[in-house]
Image 1: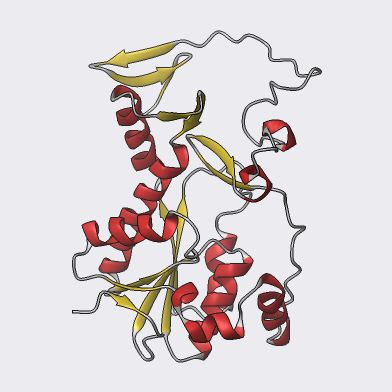
Image 2: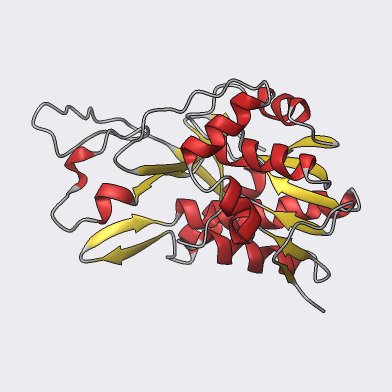
Length: 255
């Protein structure tokens, strides 16, 4: 059985991990126009830079999704984060610098929970906006199969026709505008940011240059401790544990 599909399965249900950004918006609209029945799934990971989660499924429906769901992944992500801390696996060290596993943990939870939601809706083909350049395409593929062994994978960025027609951000923006969805591209940043309730990581682009350091980053969580004008005030934090599990923070109990 072919697991990875190189062309769009027309007339079939295809799920897409939908962020609401340009890549997944263009992919959803393109797949709809090419004859797929597209179902959109958005993971709520507690991202601090996401201001309106409910707006994302609404956008997916505007772009032609058959159904759009917001999947609350926060409790599971917190559980996985605590387990990683207990196992001493919350961060890895590269060149003496700690890289927190917040993003990889988020990918594991996203992959399993979105595919589980798709399975509930009778969707056994999954696509997302990850390209062939990074780890995400492999992460989502493997986590998805763990949840649904019958899952097939369709990724627009592995489809030659999609790449030929919409191979860059300018082409995707023009495509959306041409079909009545004005989509202004955001300014290109010097690095990428991935965030969730556990933390934020910054990577890629200019940060891949060995001559470029963390000094170019404007963190969305934490403080820029490398700047001379940075002031980090001490804060007293009280955590209550029950049988090894944190259950309260500064007197406030969490389920």
